[in-house]
Image 1 (cartoon, one colour):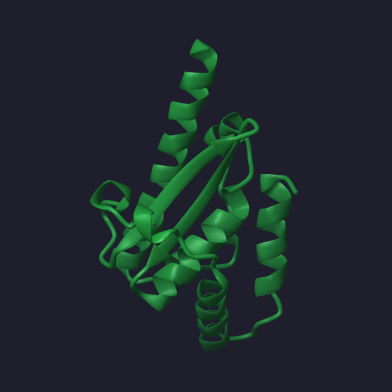
Image 2: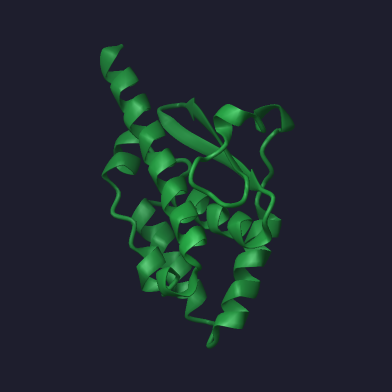
Length: 142
């Protein structure tokens, strides 16, 4: 699926819920289903700066695509990173770098997160985009 299709799927999934308590429960469920990062990647260099809770993000480049694994010590944050990974993992560095991430606003997430969680979510997206730009530059040099 493309990045747009993944985002549209998340927006569609969130339309099934009427109130934000149900949406939060769904986000927590997504976090519980997140394939966990290998323990060897839970290092300081994989910690995302700017998150109140601890979030580890690992990028793996294979077959021209970036694949991400992550974990967090907070359930809601784990759900947030799960959605971001769902949208961006398995895509090319160029597609990730060029992506317009709109699902966060579409589902109303921005206005329902605390400022610290909102900053953390933006930090996750920024880190993934940085990985994409780095791998894009690396592939151009080869």
